[in-house]
Every structure is written in structure tokens, then in C-alpha cells.
Image 1 (cartoon, rainbow, N blue to C red):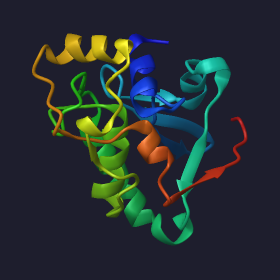
Image 2 (image 1 turned 45 degrees about the vertical axis):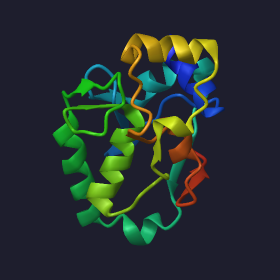
Image 3 (image 1 turned 45 degrees about the horizontal axis):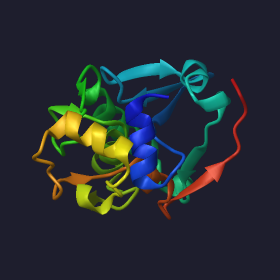
Image 4 (image 1 turned 30 degrees about the vertical axis):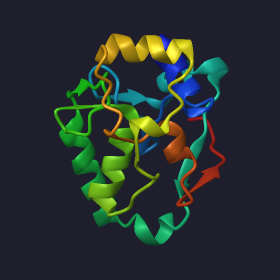
Length: 170
């Protein structure tokens, strides 16, 4: 586990430190994820990078009515616009660079008009742990932008608009 992943878990009091969007293409499953750079990754490879292969799949509660072919096309187009962008190590709310939960949130918001997860501020996280302080110092120096808008993987995980689904391995 990277230092950043551990810091995200500590700051958000969650076991989750990464998220993505699953895309089905015929019988194949991929993820669109913000890594360096934003990429499309085969789902099986993405799962293999996790902690003992653990992952959770969530879907919109009302997916059958909301995720129409037109909406899915818009979401796909939004996601494609981010492919190749650099990973955002400082969690800025811009489109110049992007981090994982920001990518998921913006694809849903811009493609489907839905806010999956509640936006917060960097100051809302628990920044007191020494490992978190070290990452923050490395990224920001002494000028931590506490009022910057952020979204974390657990914010998306906890969204009331999403439900956990069972999946078959493909």
C-alpha cells in the first residue's frame, strides 16, 4: 500500500483509498481510473492491485431508469475527455489534473446530472495523524489549502444513491 493510500484511509477513517468506474464492453469489463495518467484498465488487472483481491461494486439505486443509452454515452464521453490527464497529487478541483474520486464524481455529475457523494473541504478530513501530516507537508509545504473542495472514495462509497451489487468474475 502506498503512503498516499494509507494517508487517505487515515484521514477519512475508511478502509477505502481508491475508486473508479466500471465499464462493460460486450463481455469484457474495464475500469476508468485516475492513476498516472487517467487510464482504462481491464477489471481483472485492477482487482489484482487491491488488498487481497478485495473490491466492492456499487451501482445507482435507480440505474435502470437513469442509465439510459443516451446517459451512458454522455458519461462515456465525459470519461474519455479525462483519459491521459495527469493524476492530481494535490487534490485540486480543476480539470487540469484529476484524482480518483473526483473522476467518478465528475463523470456522474456531468454525464448523468447526479452527485454521487457529498463534496466537502480538505479541512473536513482528520489531518492529525503523523502519516497524514507527512503526506500533507510533502504535497503542500506549510500552505495547506484547507478550504479546497474535495471528494474522497469513502464519500462516494457512502452515497445514498448507490447500492452494493454482487458481481460475477469475468
